[in-house]
Each structure stands twice: as structure tokens, then as C-alpha cells.
Amino acid sequence: MPLKIFITGASSGIGAEIARQYSLLNRDNVIGLIGRNKTKLSKLHKQLGCKSLPIVADVSDFNSIETAAQIFLSEYGLPDIVIANAGVSSGSLLQNKDDIEVIEKIFKINFHGVVNTFHPFVSSFMKQKSGHLVAIASVAGIRGLPGAGAYSASKAALINYMESIRVELLKNNVKVTTISPGYIKSPMTDVNSYYMPFILDTDMAAKKIIKFISKNKRHVIFPWQMALLGRIMHILPNIVWDFLAKNAPHKKRNTM
Ligand SMILES: NC(=O)c1ccc[n+]([C@@H]2O[C@H](COP(=O)([O-])OP(=O)(O)OC[C@H]3O[C@@H](n4cnc5c(N)ncnc54)[C@H](OP(=O)(O)O)[C@@H]3O)[C@@H](O)[C@H]2O)c1
Image (cartoon, rainbow, N blue to C red; front, top):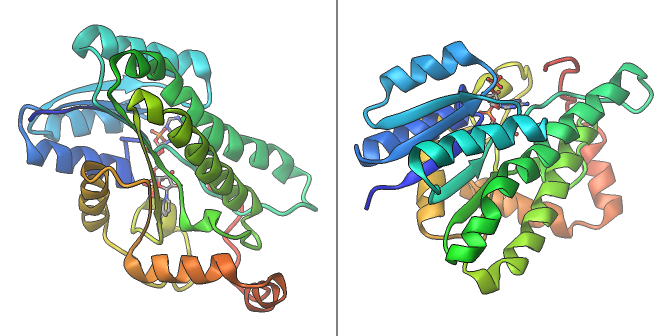
């Protein structure tokens, strides 16, 4: 059955590849491609083998993303799946005054951006007792990572928020899926100079994400090695975590 999908952060990396994979799955799918970079969105729109609608919007600005949602709704009606994938990453340190603004920006995009993306659709989903809300979180949200406190905290907040709305929306039959990837090859990780264990190619990651969505998973951490590591990280006593994490490489600052 053809699907209508609304994807934020479709101009690059994982979001662009999810759009490509959905277009390969069914030529009758319709995809809303949301991002800030008009040129990249238009390029992807031309490459896709199914109908798509590139819309420039900033997820951290509610009016901007609400307008994007209205454009999609008036052109194609209610989507079946909304994927809040847009995100940014940068190292941040509490003692750096410049990072105060960076920390706020990361939260506005990675956390509030997801809320802003879902809100324009959720009432109709609830009324129709259908629809699927998907957020791309991160394994970085499982424990506080040194040097990337804002990114880590924004994804931790997102994981908990998704759990809240998943339960809230159960009685309305609105599906909610949280995806927490480990390292995926994309412009976001291309800036990392440290070793990234179990890193996956973007197309493999996008295929897996689409499969998890179709199986209506609640919260998936992938690849499986990261899922195992994530579960261990989650239950480690603080003293052990502190010992293991204190020498972890720090994410570069000023990467957004
Ligand atoms: N790569 C990894 O290893 C990894 C691991 C775990 C989780 N993730 C998560 O996966 C998601 C996608 O990341 P990626 O690796 O594909 O990174 P990416 O290639 O840098 O893509 C990020 C996307 O988000 C969009 N975006 C950023 N700020 C936005 C804003 N304010 N409004 C609208 N769109 C915005 C960007 O488009 P514009 O610049 O055009 O706006 C871009 O399309 C992110 O949420 C990230 O945190 C990535």
C-alpha cells in the first residue's frame, strides 16, 4: 500500500536516505522533504522515483514547521508517517560562555523541533485513530556523554518524551516509535576524528529504520552491538560509568 511520509532533515544524511529508500519501496509513495537547505532539497526531489514535495522550514521555529505541515496537508492530505529526524550535534562545555547559546540551539532543534514537527498532525491522527510518529533519537541519550552534554541531554529528553506520548496516544491508536541509532556515516559523523565502533552506512541504516517503523517498534537501539552496549551502559553503577567514561573522546565544538 502506498504511504505518505513527512520527513524533517531530509536534505542530508539519514533523512535523505530514508526518503530515497521509501521512494524505492513504492513509486506511489508521497514524501514531504523538510529542511533549511533549498538547493539540497530540490536536488533530492529531482532524484526520487516517487512524488515528493520539498519544503523549506526550520523545525526550531514553530510557525515555520506548522506552515510546512499545512503546505503538505493541503497538497496531499494527512501523512501516514511523520519522521522527526532533523538534528544537530556539537560538543559543548559548561565553562565556555559561547556554549550557552549552542546548548540552547541544540535543545531547540533536537527536542523542541520534534515537538513542533508532531503537533500540527497529532489532533487529526487522534481523531482518525491512525498515524505514526517517529523520532530519531540516539544511543547518546542513554547516559550522559562527557563533552557532548547538550546533545546527550537533548536525546535523553527526547527518548523520555517519546515514551510519554507513546502511552498517551495508545488509546487513540496513534503509533509512536523512537529510533536510537549508534554511529551512522553522515555529514554529522564525518567531522569526528575518533574511532566510531560499529559504524553503519547510511543506506543500511535507512533500510533498518524503515523496517523498524513498519514493524511498529516502540524503541529500537541499533545496530545490535550498540543495543547490547546501550543496555549495559543503562544499568552500570555511576561509579563504574564515571571510571569508563572519563577518558572518552570529546565531540568537536563549533560543528553546527
Ligand atoms: N549520524 C549518526 O551517527 C547519528 C547517530 C544517532 C542519531 N543521529 C540523529 O539522526 C538525525 C539525522 O542526522 P544525520 O546523521 O543524518 O546528520 P546530518 O547529515 O547532519 O543531517 C541533519 C539534517 O537535519 C536538518 N536540520 C538541522 N537543523 C534543522 C532545523 N533547524 N530545521 C530543519 N532541519 C534541520 C539538516 O538540514 P538543513 O541543514 O537543510 O536544515 C539535515 O538534513 C539527527 O537527529 C541525529 O541526531 C545521527
